[in-house]
Length: 155
Image (spheres, rainbow, N blue to C red):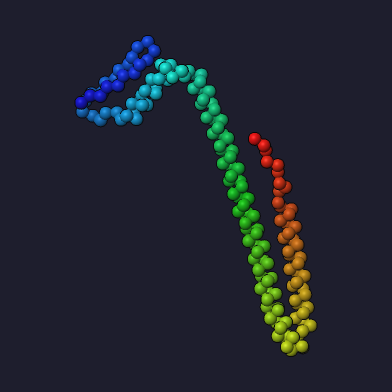
């Protein structure tokens, strides 16, 4: 069994014939052989300088891609940290809300029995003040840690 391929090159043609019992090159392998012959024969118009320049561009693009990957990793870490802070703030506010619900129930019970009313009202007022303080602290922290909107570049 034999397989032949012929290439037209500047100054003549090149024919390769593969014979024997072993596996023959695949069409993809023939395409690779053709590409190498085209580049080195000058048929594709490529020069060694052009190939070196192309390699340098690829290296530069690879460095830029590495920088973008690092920026994405940094951003992911920042989002994770902000998510943790937000979750903590939500847990704090939920705890205060549960306490307020309990105090409202106690207040309703105390209204029915006026003896406990001043103590329950004082606790409710203190928790309302604490809730306002925590809301303000959270709002201030969100504002302080939110970057200013940047103008998008025009293309």
